[in-house]
Structures are given as structure tokens and as C-alpha cells.
Image (tube, rainbow, N blue to C red; front, side, top):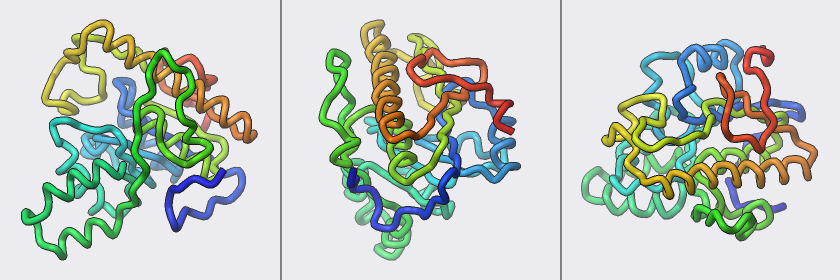
Length: 244
């Protein structure tokens, strides 16, 4: 596997574990405090910064591969870039944002921000009636799932083992806030119809099935340690408290 990820990937000692932090309702500051206390390697995704005010924890890496039609991430990307941890953003999202930033900020500000960002190949959410699309695990392109799936791929490519997921309970529901914060979206309750909600949950399940298959093929362990359990049943679960 020769993925096109980062010209300067991190050097990972064999047996180094990492955590992928999803933004589901189960995510709480005390979980992140535990990760901070133990100096764990962590992938944060999307609008995770909304929990920063409640914890000293910060991710080691930040990913954004979910396209936001409302352009919320136009502001989120510069914020994360200024924090100092490495940022990985889907290339077409970066292209849209750069077009917005040109003329709105100085060239110096733009270059400073871009210096801390790596671009990832474009993601196409897989169709739920196809269990395998073009394989990102082979060609290095991010063609399945969203930011958590991208983090799964980066963690595997860079050599982390084992890999633990938290805040990834799945079970997206219509008419509810499906994230840890009501500030996550300007829509307080998910307005998707039942068919769209089912498709979203199916995609989470399928991407996890593909991740588990590829992890096992490379003899790397992955577990879902989401506190309170998860409806994403493809990846084996483990009690978060047992990890410390």
C-alpha cells in the first residue's frame, strides 16, 4: 500500500496506540481529560474545538473530510491551523475555502495558515447498496466515509497499533441533536428524513466493516471504546476504563 497522505508522515514506534475521537453525543470532557493525563496520541475531527473550553485536551492531529454546505469550516480551518497540531483537510474543501479567503485575508496570513495544513484526496461517501467502492486502502485516495473513516486510514497507514475509537456511537436519529454540543450546527435537530437517516447509519456501519477488514489484513487491532456502547457493531468493542 502506497497511500498519498503526507510527504512527512510521523515516525511511529511499533506498538504505539492512538485514539480516534468522534463527535457523537457520548463524548464528554472527562474522557478527553483522561487522554490528556496519559499524553495519548489522538485524532480529532471536524468541529471538535467546541469542547475545548471544557478540557485541556487537544488532538495530535485534526482531520476535516466532511463537506459542509453552509461553509462553517471556512472559519474552523484557520482556527485549527493556529493551534499548532497538524491539520489534514480534504483537497476540494481546501480549494473552496481558499477561494473564499483570497482578498479577505492577507497573503502572509494565508501562507502562514497553509503551512500547517496537509491536503487529502477527495472523499466520496460510498453508496449504501455497494459494500465496496474504489478502494482507498489500495490507492491512497479517501473514497469511503467521512472524517472518522479518514482517521482510521491515516492511523493504519502511519503504523499505530492498537487503534481505539471514542465518541463513535452511531445511532443517528431524526429530530435530535446527534453531536456532543448543541452548537455543532445551526440546526438544533437533524432534519433528514427516515431514508436519509438510515443511509447515514448504514454508511457508518459499512465503513467500519471495511476498516476492520483492512486492519485485520495488516494484523493491526482496532476497537470501539465509545463510552456507553455503540450501535456501530462492525468493530469489536472494549471498555474505555480498561485502557488506563
